Length: 302
Image (cartoon, rainbow, N blue to C red):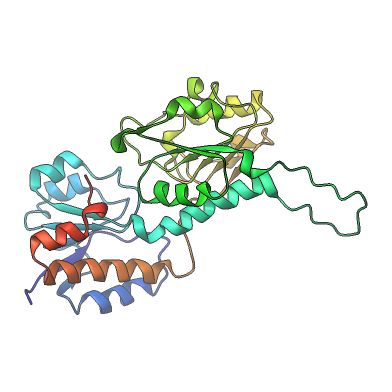
């Protein structure tokens, strides 16, 4: 077994207090593990707050061959720098995909099938809801989350359209038919502010927009204006252009529901992150280059 150096660039604020010690205990069995970045490691663990350009300027990436990014969002990673240095980046989309898809489904059911709970018996047997099997959705983004969400929605809805140019699935023209818009894309130059005034004004008046992906994909002022002028529409937002976000900006709106970047959170997420890191590093040590690349092809930053 080859000896490697492993380092973590920084820790996310939502980690439990025990995370650092547990991660150290697990990863120290695989190589020399630095909890603070002191020199250039062969394997670097990052998060969405890591500034790779700064690390490069400080000389911390000279020996780095593999970056493990156990997050879904990767807009802080300069792909030009990664190509220049020839570093492989393995993303952690698979860690949170089930949780994010369940968030999307929770919003869908709350919007269309919210149960009319009662404190006392009500006569009339009324439930103002439509049939989901007659509804359509547009998924923007077709990575791990988009593909899993499509499988779930195909069992519920009439039509599920996909828009993702990188996958040659370009159904953006179907947006005016969609009852639900699910945003599952990464933040890129092409997705930034794509949900703008022109996009919104082409949607159904009672559309529901669900965004657990990246806040800057939506022009938040255009969305606010749309919701003000289209009271039958609804938005479910878990992410925002800047965080923390001043929710009081939405006080005048009755058709928006917000949460605090929790779509990918679940009870044992810390254990899943450490298990993912350990598995990737162990495979990196044990496998030849071709076998490693084949196994992690779908998780590589491209």
